[in-house]
Image (cartoon, rainbow, N blue to C red; front, top):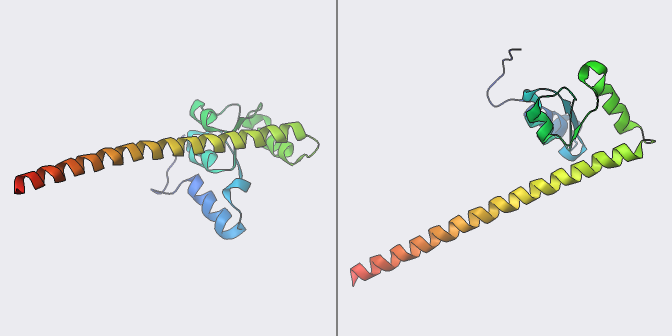
Length: 140
């Protein structure tokens, strides 16, 4: 299908503003369920992101879990029931473990980026010091 939206506004930003400003809950307490490419940022944003069985490949790759049901098979309702059903502790613990893994991967990615940036800054600083030495040599 064809979708039209406002630049800079997507499901993730709308969900974030609504949950933070209206419901006063943080992203770690949000569950998002989707099936389309336009759900990707929302699934990434939520503390727990679930892709439907019939979701696009890209969404399944970023989701914390993939439902064994499609949206046409009441997959959304089934996933909500599974999360709320305290008797299904195994499924809930698995979902929570997936969230922890997602958080660990995000932290690992962040540390890797910081390390890369530190190396770049070190290189820039070294170049700046070399340039400063050369300028001083020319002034003598």
